[in-house]
Amino acid sequence: MPLQPLQVDRAVLALGLSGLAKVTEELDRLAAHVAAARALLAEPGPVGGRSDFLALEFNRRADALMFLGAVDCADAHRA
Image 1 (tube, one colour):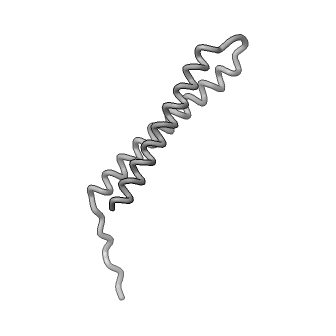
Image 2: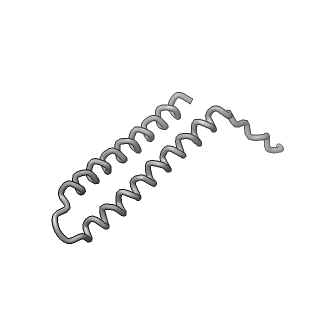
Image 3: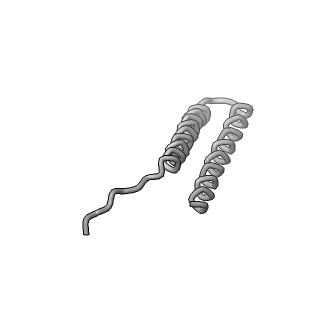
């Protein structure tokens, strides 16, 4: 039996690619914050305010990634 051509729903594909782009963007931001935190920890002296800011940013990125994962799961469940 010959293989049938793969049927791709363009809307689903576009949604998946846009979701991937958003996840990639959040991971890039997270990587930048990790680099900033490493540099900050290497500095002598107090770093309180800047470390507070980075802690907030880590939480924002984690929340965004969790939300994107939840949306992706909900979309997959509906399909």
